[in-house]
Amino acid sequence: MKLADFSLVVNSYTMFADENAGRSVVTVAKQRKQRQTQAGPWPQVRARLRPLEPFETQAGSQPEDSRMVEFWKQEGDLPLPDTIGEYSALDTPSLLGDYIHVFGRDEAPPDRDVIDFFAAYGPLWERSWQSGLPSPLWAEELDERDRGRLSVPAQLALCEPVWLLKQRARELRRAYQLYLALRGKGLPALRALLGGGLEQGRRIADIRLLEGELIRDTEPDGSSSPTGMRRLRPVPEWECRLHANALLSEQLSRGEAGLRRYWDVLWPAVSEDTWMSLTRGRMLESLTAALFLQLAQLVEENAVLTQCQGCGRLFHPGRRDQVYCSVRCGDATRQRGYYEARKSRRQSPRSRGKGG
Image (cartoon, rainbow, N blue to C red; front, side, top):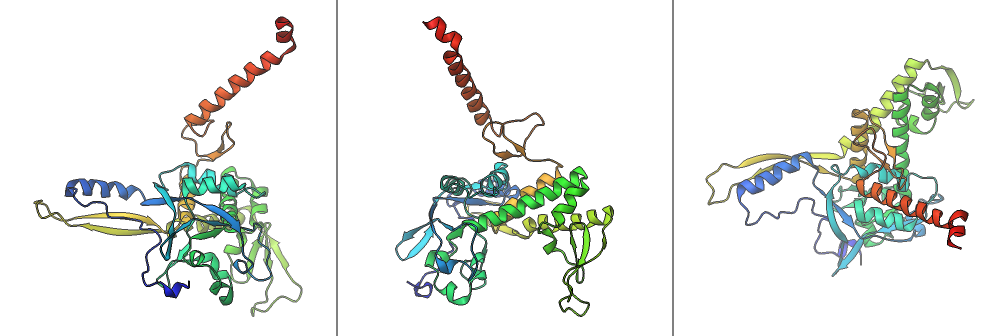
């Protein structure tokens, strides 16, 4: 069934469902004021993996990961998100570290890790609403004929390719490494990072920064340089940091760009002798925005991510001496170490001799 055959168009997920029927105005107002410090609930979904179809990738390109994540269920003629719960993305400190840990590695993430991430944190949901329907931004890179061959769930942004998840993780990791280089005042690391892909987001006329040197690859009239890239001059340390600051600011601003602010007008019930209330709320347009907002918060606090000594996950420590991502992980690690030490003592030669 084609998308045009649907007689009823429903938003794939209602971000702010009205569950306030029968409640007092005071109770509702308090609950909505609490949402001012949040960004609304984000869905947790039941996901499954399938291979990418040939028409779901750009012609002539080979994706680094050939899996597609689906998180929809069929309800009559309309596919809907297969939600299993919701949470506040901005109030979940483990989001950024877990995302980089799962999708930021060079190797392909295991199927179980991908499914568990969607169950805990939900999809990225980078969508466009230009046509009045939710459509995935990743599909805009396809040609028009291939976009027409996409399944209805894919056209409704209910599928996400794993290569997109890995690409966003690389962008987050590069921005985080750029922050570490600026924070640690390591000029060699900074020069290497500026030649690692982030320079594409910043151009000054026809000159760009690459590995600590200014490069010209076009002529003043905009035509291609006949000699290819020409190195103009080395960049001094202060100018290198100036470029790095601009690049990091550009990356961190992606979070604010994906956070929509709105006013919520609450009219009192007929039986209540109160005036209407006006509260201010925030709504995430994608999980990508939440990830970059958490990274910006990390930079604002001059903090770093720490690798958990128990499970290896990256996390934002609440104290300087915190070595485990959670109390539960620390207890499990200490208990596991106790049983392993006990088992090794039993298997030692001295213990076997005493037993004989």
